Image (tube, rainbow, N blue to C red; front, side, top):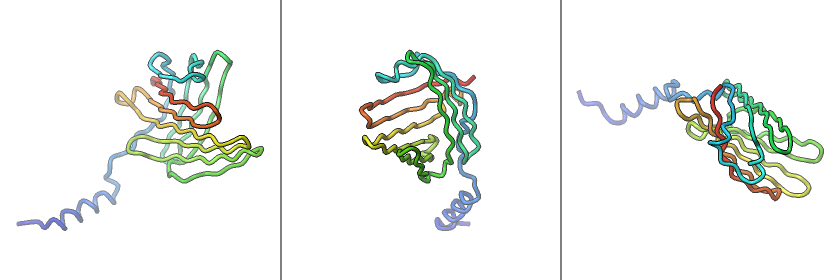
Length: 157
């Protein structure tokens, strides 16, 4: 029996619609900065050590970081949904537009920060390497007089 190409295509589309596509990576875990494996621009290169905790239950992504640098400690956290939608917030005259979305197996967080003295854009492309034992976060920062390109490498705890 000869199967028509349109029938085969229809079957494949139906299977994809049923959710049989490749599962997205889960970034959950505790991660320790591997400073020697990281490549950091001037300014970011003052970071000496760091830990990141990620709680990821797609679409919810929660990121909490604590770093130690030559200039002192730095801590921050955020929570976004990986649906790619932009979220706008304004605090003390600063408007921030945030989004988180999938690009293949990479999860990309983006911020556009508008201040009275100009705009800054930050993006982090998160990818799991070495069967999930390593997290790579490629950072691009533009504006605010601090353009940077950083590759942060973390080891799973």
